[in-house]
Image 1 (cartoon, rainbow, N blue to C red):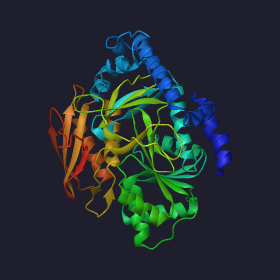
Image 2 (cartoon, rainbow, N blue to C red):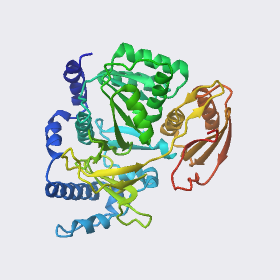
Image 3 (cartoon, helix red, strand yellow):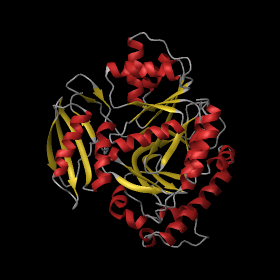
Image 4 (tube, one colour):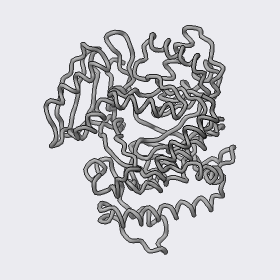
Length: 442
């Protein structure tokens, strides 16, 4: 579909029906990206104080943990005086944190990458602002709303979820290519679909795009001329992988970073600098003692999500601030490095490779339906043998063991067998990171 028709006949009307007035924010976001640093700081303080005040008045959870700061209280003291929000808080106290669940507030089950799925809500204005900031950032790559996208992403297992995904893809003028199956036959089919669809850009998991890139190179296939850039997300992008993708496709790679709970956090500009979406959130880095740091754990405060206030939320990833100004002229803060979660590719007895999101989808679906566990971890010990660690809740039912095993058999291979262990806590790696899907075959 033509990008102009897609943008004005489908995308904007469909988002307006959900109360997301994206168009009214786009000009402001373009202007804010180059605002003077003093203005940026004033904006951050005003927005931070506003969401803190709102949460204290409307959220039972925050009413008991947020002080009423005087307007003369220094901003640094305001920030440092607020306790951190942990993933465990979202899971245990979500009903107290949420302020409202209107028909327009979008519900999302997320957090499967850490093994602790959680359902939260986002109000329309917060979603509109997130999308406006994201599209602004895609503009740095030469992409605009309505441009054809080939999306290397998860494919929902349920029929209703699959139908919903197809409808969203149609409105967004994109084709979804499964990142779950990375075997040679599927990669060949992906390439053929790209030839027919002629997307302007590729978007999706680093490992899935890299797998296709290896296939294209190995088969000496020509790059598809319609593709003008590649946007990678959700996984760590190494410089080696970046250079490989750029060499084979002949276009620039733009990396983005975010998390399901707050959405887009940072995007790369044309100079390769990772700019924080600081007009939507306040981002901090803290060390192991929870003190401000140059390198540390990422902590975010979402300025606009009033449905589920996220104030000083520990994301679980680590990053390093950059002290260099960017040649692009944008004054949005820059992160030098993201030290994200590790994802392992799953190998099957049939010789295929499966993206770990396929496994996460199974558990996120079960968690949405049952709320029966607080953490999980899946470890591939042999091609057909998996260790599944589960931290149960009081809603647990042993019937779920059968559902989990059958789900893994559908996603990976019919011969898959599971050994289940119930534990009090899923162990982390020595680095402190959580590998919720882990393969011992590498």
